Image (cartoon, rainbow, N blue to C red; front, side):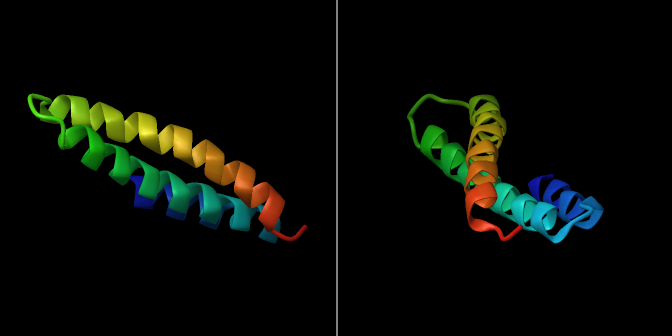
Length: 76
């Protein structure tokens, strides 16, 4: 789902700057979602539903961080 959202945001962006920011946001959000899933899934007694929730939350939080980074790094 994260890859599809990232691809859609990159393709639908109107400017090069928006595409760059979408790539940063999607990439960092995808990595953050996977890492939070692994971290939460490694806790004994935590079920897959909690890991799935951690993936969604981590994706949103790290996606926002990626957007901030993209706005600084990407050329205008």
